[in-house]
Amino acid sequence: MTSTTRLTVAQALVRFLAAQYTERDGVRRRLIGATWGIFGHGNVAGLGQALVEYGDVMPYHQGRNEQSMVHAAVGYARQSNRLSAHAVTTSIGPGATNLVTGAALATINHLPVLLLPGDVFATRPADPVLQQLEVPYAGDVSVNDCLRPVSRYFDRITRPEALIPAALQAMRVLTDPVDTGAVTLALPQDVQAEGFDWPQEFFAERIWTVRRPGADPVELAEAVQAVRGARRPLVVAGGGVHHSRAEQALAEFAEATGIPVASTQAGKGSLRWDHPQDVGGIGHTGTATADELARTADLVIGVGTRYTDFTTASGTLFTAEGVRFVNLNIAPLDGHKLSGLPLIADARSGLEELTEALTVHGHRVDPSYVTEYTEDKQRWEHRVDACFEADEPDVRPTQPQVLGVLDAVVDDSDILVNAAGSLPGDLHKLWRTRSPDQYHLEYGYSCMGYEIPAAIGVKMAAPDRPVWALVGDGTYLMMPTEIVTAVQEGIAIKVLLVQNHGYASIGNLSESVGGERFGTAYRFRSGDGGYTGAPLPVDLAANAASLGMRVLRAKTVGDLRAAVAEARAADTPTCVYVETETADTVSGAPPAQAWWDVPVAETATRPSAVEARKEYDRHVSTRRRHL
Image (tube, rainbow, N blue to C red; front, side, top):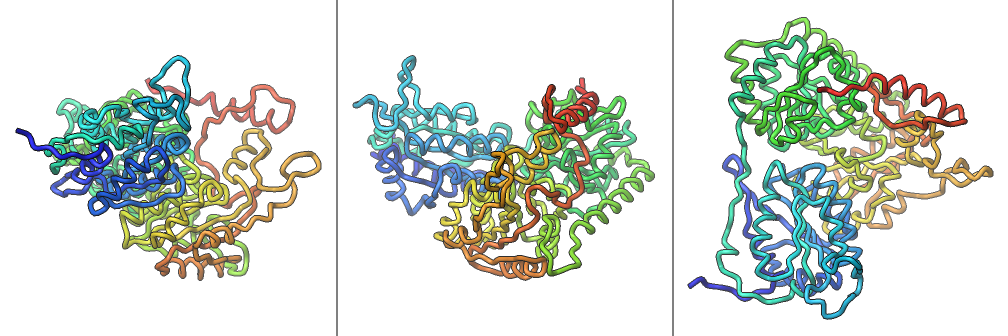
């Protein structure tokens, strides 16, 4: 007879989660490392009570905003190479709907997070209950259904025994390198507290093996033939290189063949910046070296990339006659993009197989091609030096000079977290990545407010390493509240807060597409009704200090150098505040090296929009579909 244990649904779920593990390459990790939570009437007596009951096996972290709790969990998962994740629990109603943005970010970036929102009563003792959405045409819909399109797996546990298959399916998806993303188990508040006799097997340790599938022999042979026949091949390294820990395999492939490697935002750092084959970022925010190689490439070898529109410059970058694509990707959806030759495999396994097959043939690109991209790379690095250079220590720094100061202080151990604003473009072009996981850019969703909570999650996964959240004033104002969490938990993140009085990135974009920077500056209204008056008298440094963070103010380049060095050595949460150029000036970084499709008004009377439309028509005429 099967032995059972009487527990509530919430207690059983916590016990189950504490016994789940992943294993890859012989290394075992706990799958759910901790639970984040904000408690309300939807989960306080269910999961809240369960976490008290089993606090010895499930660590708990208190958040300030439901969306930011998901960001922290995502940061932790990415730093853990998707082998360990966090759960997030919320009350019903607004607590649950606040999860939607974070869930979308996790799913778009293929990063695992387990969402456990409370839900309305399954037994419906009162109808409607507090915070219940009434839907006239469906009695079983709640606000949690908003999470369906942004989740890789969704279930609502309306009976205790339904938890068993749902929990197992949830773990399967979280650990699947193809399907992983946000997983939602909606938990009605009455069901959470309901008792049930659970089979002991449900709580036994369970290991989920993370697969490394190799390539199909036919696909591998076709890929090898394509590489051997190419004169100007180019690798585009995406986030899948990091997820697979395929950086060394990529380096060996590049060194053996001489093929240059460009990187997406998610793939940057796949090779060190000074590796001979690394040519920097690609696409709209890429380097001149990488983008020129892309324009002339006759074969593009995508490794773990989704080929987003930034990467492909909205279909205008890969323009060589007859250009072909080989797509090494564990996900068939991405492997078949751009009508490329699919090579469906784990990034590390596939690269190792490609290298072995090409080495047998002694394949290597022509030495003149190596000389060409090496010289181009050297010229670009001189441009980076010029952007970073700040000979006058008593002046206000430009944003690239801020990065230059940081570049001079960090080493291989530092991790930089960023997601939105003008910083992603400057970082992708200019940052010299020293280690595979130093460059943590969330650019799949480019979510403002991600940086500070994500840095907390990264620091939890890498407690001995300096972790920097790089934020502009716009993204800081979106979600600064997790500073309180960092202070409460003693998580010594470093926040580099750049004040430029507005949405600088969108301001520059708006100007280029005829929008005249409308609505992008943080200024008082002027006589004409627009936001063109004096800058707002906000003091973000004081705000950060009011939340408990130590703040170092830097007015000049010299101040900044001292403050960054002091912050790096600090063992408490520390913010460096620096004011740079205003939102209506150029940051000082090189302009975009490739076009990005942002539609411009087809008819307008204002000259700026008319001229922008002419430029748009010129670029859009070069767009192509690879069929």
